[in-house]
Length: 607
Image (cartoon, rainbow, N blue to C red):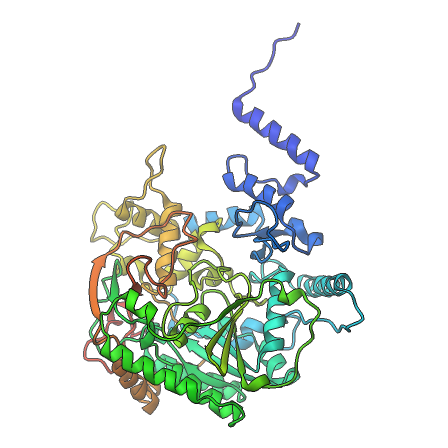
């Protein structure tokens, strides 16, 4: 009788996994790693997900799985609006990991920080967004959904046929989420496109501009949000860039937490966050500009006097009630009527072309994830009525809020449009959930080659015996040095947890404490002109006037959390639960007009 060969536990585990996957009919090349807990979770997702697009299931990774005990009372599936992105192949992930270990980081020139929107979206190409196909009231709901599914599959086929996966960025493959956008555009009288001022061309798809202003004939208001995270000269340069290329835009500057850029800031205080108590939402910069834009668009067809009165009350209340706390803030002011439209996008109710119905203007808020759509609504209302989170996909279906009896706001889930952006930049922009990134190291390298992360965080090279000596850095070295500095260790072997360190660095960039700003074309050549521009000084004075001068501020060093389960944690625009605080990054952009420039450490006044 032949002697039996040794059979390890690992081999047995692999054998059982292969057997289960053969039963499910999965392809061998798409099997998840045997030692990954996410592998089994993703396999369960393939079985439990009920959304459309099953023909491309094996190419898609579904994110933000929500616990579910079956369908809800109206057949509502909490996972219907999950993020659907193209899955990175295992070979591509391993290739990027090797590059993070081997590629030496070199600082890029200031010209490479200039982004041209034509290179990102290539207007006129197939990098469009899916349109709702024509329909009639004679069609049943099943016929309508089937027609939309076929049209959506054709849309995906054109994009993937024209570009390879290496060139394409992450973009939304979930038809259910696109249906939410269709419904918001159909019911809106004015469309707000919210962008992040640090990289506005990333969040501005020209195809949406052409569709809204051309086919729908609606007014489009571009909101440059989070202007407190960029130098005022750069904000003004971006504003003129969009005015020049898209003349039909109405542009509004907005931030939920304005700060005076003339106030000296310590650029080395990355690990500290400022907690401000008081009426934070009522100090938003931009509601009055947005009101003026809407008055110009409606041209007296809607009575917006109640909105102007509300802004006056908010300003007066913020001046009178500094440091009053969250309880008083929540009780003041009239209640806000909230309507959750879970299944409205699926009903065959066509677009109503009657503008300003019943004397009410409907303002739709659309944009990419993490640009601050929900925070903008909180800033307009004057208190927190919408939950916000740094996790993309937190807003799962559109909701409507009556700001005043004549103004209705509509919050749309964040949507990622197809483009040719590097996926590392998308990660830094908060488009991809950081906790679910398979390979975060190259994104850290992308950041470190554009701002001096090592100097800002006072990192010591892991192989350096002499701290004063110069050593070449790679992305892996930065993550390992940060893990050593913060004490991130693995559970079993107590090695430096570089994955957790990489996640922590990406969260610092997302929160704005490691601020990376991109510039419009030609900005560096005309930088002096923009710094001396009259609108730059006006913005500096305006931020200083509405900034948190009377709020109670305190700074403390934060224990940075970078665990892989932070989906419920709120971002810089969120209120701290139970405290009524708002987290605002301390590493604030500066201005050359200030006596002390907080960007001196970043090199040539650049973000």
